[in-house]
Image (cartoon, rainbow, N blue to C red; front, side, top):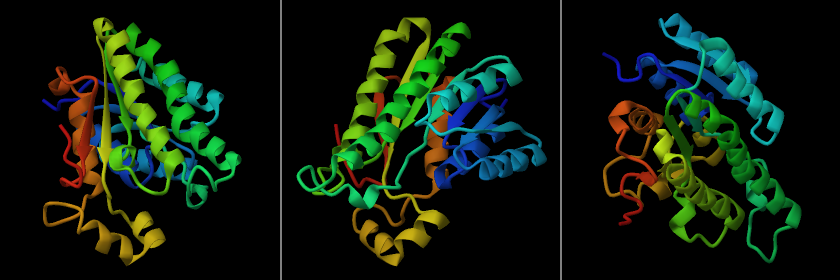
Length: 254
């Protein structure tokens, strides 16, 4: 039996490089998937691919910076499939990433923008998903963080702060709603290569990143999707409140 058979899972950021692979993996494991993404056309394409392969999926436009969009994503799962068993907050906003320089030089508007989407947006996902998970007698919240949360980089302080906050958020959810059957965990990816990232960053990123890993290759979206499938399934039922790095050993933490 597929380990997500009968589960209903919504994913915010379900049509990007990591998100699309994760949406497909969850569906292949038996889940009914609500593919949420700010790019509705891409979300519809992923959902159509899942349906063509024999899975169950619908698309939903969601900008996690907009409260109404987050509410609509959760409602789509409940109205279409009857409830919610898992929610993967995977979205990220990089529109002002190059301006995230240091806390002295950056404009406060840049900081506000990055925190609004990459921290507040995840707060909103949690706020609306958790009550539906409780109604089902339990479920799983899953967040995508980043190695930037604990790397101590000389740049990207706002992004690192936002991602660090997700670790505290997951622990809060795991602690507060654990007795209601809710688990909450974080995946912290390293550099994960996909066509969109490679096109934007060029070959220099891969050349730098391969020096950081302890193995022989860089990460691919399937690596993150596999961990997401485990943490959202009953096989991951005794894992909660954890930050799990999937980064080829780029970081090694207790």
